[in-house]
Length: 102
Image (cartoon, rainbow, N blue to C red; front, side):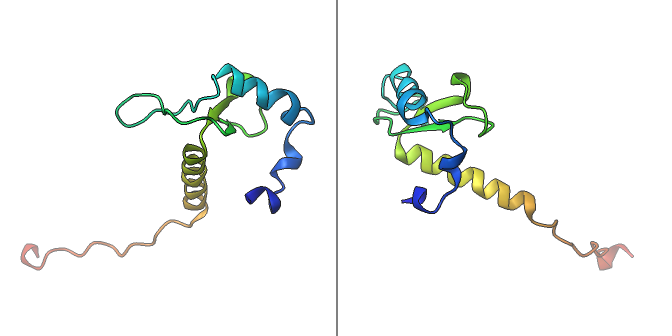
């Protein structure tokens, strides 16, 4: 499990497990709030409560219930975006003029 090696749990408020997480799951009807490609809401049961934006903002408006699949997908996309942002820009060779245009 990812929690075993993560320091993320220490960043959550003390009442995350007892108050905040259950409140968000109940608010969302214990159902994943992600939407499928066809525009319908995911039919899976919510297993995770995820931060929509700032991971340090634990307000109800910044939290959503997700199924494990959607949570993993969102986390992977955010991780890939963070890695891309850290990469130095590619150095490209200057475009050569076409030989017939000289």
